Image (cartoon, rainbow, N blue to C red; front, top):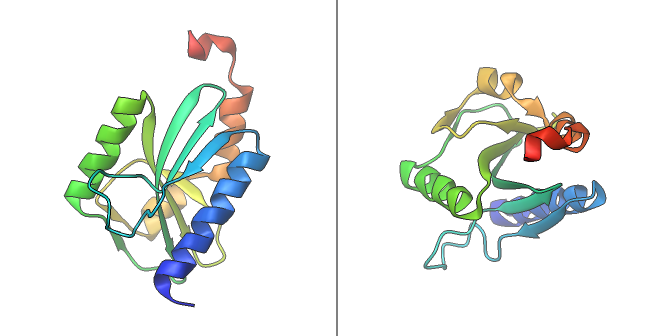
Length: 133
């Protein structure tokens, strides 16, 4: 399976995960395809009013992930326009998906400090109404 196809499969699996968890979710059309004039994030999930904007990165083995500064800027700009939060969603091999703050470089230590996706979503769904008003 080629790299772009593998990434698309991972993104679709994540979109299905968010949907099953009770979020409204969109996978960016042609995300990663480089054919859009405006930036489109990989995943946008709306969970109990929280708008979550993700750049998804998967590697089969632990190796540093580098993200271009322009892409980070566009991700953060999109999240700001949507009234949401920008994050990286990273997975190495058979490890869990982890939510990380946006940064240009993700190494193994950064990944291990990230929050597991299921735990992150549980925190959103268990948050009191005070967090939304």
